[in-house]
Length: 296
Image (cartoon, rainbow, N blue to C red; front, side, top):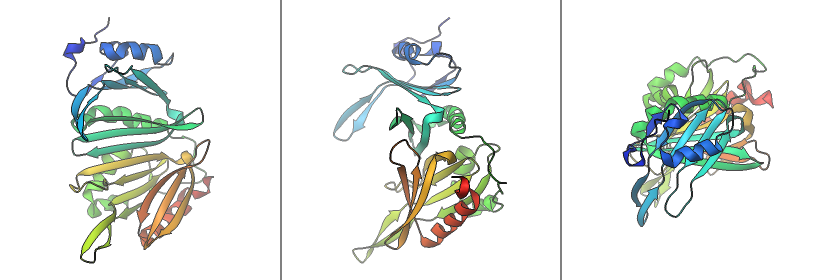
């Protein structure tokens, strides 16, 4: 029997559901019509409609949900007065990049995936107070993007990684709590403090944010601060399955190195760029060469 609440009783904060028939009316019909047959639902994260000031006016976001299944995730976006509801089915084996931003109370999940040979993006914004409801299903989805074949040679864990907590407790905690799954092996990491350059002779301008770049036996994870935020209370994660990495380049960028991680697509590679100091870029090159570079 359906347990979906009337639209007037939808909670004002994000909430979690266990089954499709619990969805509120604006999303229930869309989900029933567009969820691929045979999908086993593992959980549903729902973000209610909200109206807030953005730019130069009020902006209303529709109610939406992420329906996580054993094979992927269905994003369901409810209707607005001038717009019909829509859905996006994202198979886990088509995902090439997941980006998660947790900036104070602002959360944003972005999923890049292949659809008929093209790179498309799904995104959802939400209040980070409710992130604990999303996190378990998100972690399972990240694991589903991996290619769980045995590595071509033994993977040696980085014995220095536990000591990283002394360098940056915040970033170490971020990797442990949000990024590294049980059984996943850290092969190496590079920590890069903020990079600045002189500006107008007496000022200093930030060129690149603080970040840590880690490679495991399953993925590359980038954890960095948001470039424009000055509160230093933010995490921005990028999760890249190893089998989606096409090639990695290093380019000289003034006094620094621009590291370009090119992701495999059916067209042109999708580049992910970060700035490193030369010493950190050399350390990363050695980690990548000794760990996973020869896979393909």
